[in-house]
Image (tube, rainbow, N blue to C red; front, top):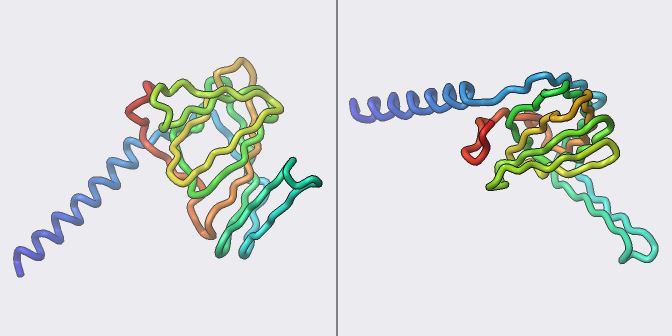
Length: 166
């Protein structure tokens, strides 16, 4: 019986240490202001749109179960960063002012991709760790449309990946 209690204490201690280390090593945002313009809940989504002829353009969005959809405005000061983070679902990112560079942990060179006003990109979420940085000379602004599982935490800070120097 004493050995079972010992192992429970050890496991709980390790879990606590891991949670503490994750919060200490996380990279919070800096120079970013965030406004949530809207959040709505949806039941199952099953949209299959196409143009005529259908082979020119198609779109399909399908979810199973409840979803939360957010519209989020982020303003990044010159030198600002979102910090390394992930989301539990995909985001459509529209750059509406200035430019942002998106760095992903899945890029072994951590080269980053720069997007300027009028351009957009997709953050697939679901474990894809990334950071946005404003390396330009004016305030950058993005609008994100996020599709997330109902009740999920919208953004989770993550530690700096091994392949990136910042």
